[in-house]
Structure formats: structure tokens, C-alpha cells
Image (tube, rainbow, N blue to C red; front, side, top):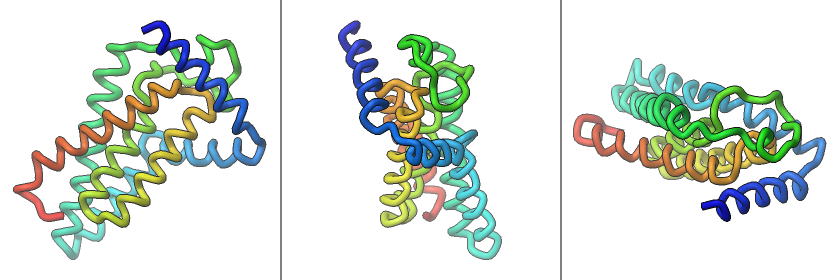
Length: 179
């Protein structure tokens, strides 16, 4: 297990050194801010709900996105982060992150988990939109690495968790709702 932690740190430092650029700094800060508190994904879910005022199908779509985010939040932020309590990489590896230090534990990446939960729900609604959402989710995960606030395994864990939580929600709601 120690070799994995060492590889995780080396990979993160390599990514930071390889891709570091002032313009990319600004882009990654912007992308990451869109994911703060799941903002972009909650906005999309609410937008779907608003379309649902005239079309029941859109209401179901909004519910799917928001319910996937809620289940993911419980699994990620309420259960796993406090349980695992992984230290952020900048404390372990001794560097200053590009954005101000974050106070909660590192594993799994909440930004990434929420992004993949929403992308999975959106993919269930419409494959083309889902592919675009998955691409944005991957960029979100990369932004967390680029900014130095997560290890690669935090982001990978977030991507897996978000996908699994949304698939669970899809399975639980599929017979009751039309997407």
C-alpha cells in the first residue's frame, strides 16, 4: 500500500510540473469553482425541473440529476470523507496549492464525485449530453489535480463513487420515472 501512496504523490507532482501555466491556472480555477458545492450540476438539475413545469418528463430528469447528487453527497461527504480522513496532498508533499487550502479531508474528491454522478444521470437521459457531461466531469477531476488539492486516487475514487451512486439511483427510479 505504501508504494501506491508514493506513486500517487509522484504522479501528482509530475502533473503539476508538466502542465503548470498561468493561463491554465485561471482556466482550472474557473472550472473548479463551477463545481464548488456542486453548483453547476445543481443548476442543471433545477433547470430540468423548471422545464418540467410544462413537461412531466423534464421534471423526472431534474429529479434524477438532483437525487443522484444528493445520494452521492451523503456517500462522499457525510460518510467516506470523515471515515477515511485522508490528509490533503499539499500538507503531505509540502507545497502551496494554487487555490487557498481546503479544510475537509481529501478522499474522495467531492467535486469529481458530484461531476460524475451528474454526468451519469445526464447520460441516462441523453447520450450526447451525457458524453459532454462526462468530458466536463473529467476536466473537473483534472482541475482538482492541477490545483494541487487532491491526489490522483482521490479523483479516481470520486469518479467511481459518483458513477456508482448515480447508477444506483437510476436503477432504483427507472420503473417509476420516464427519462
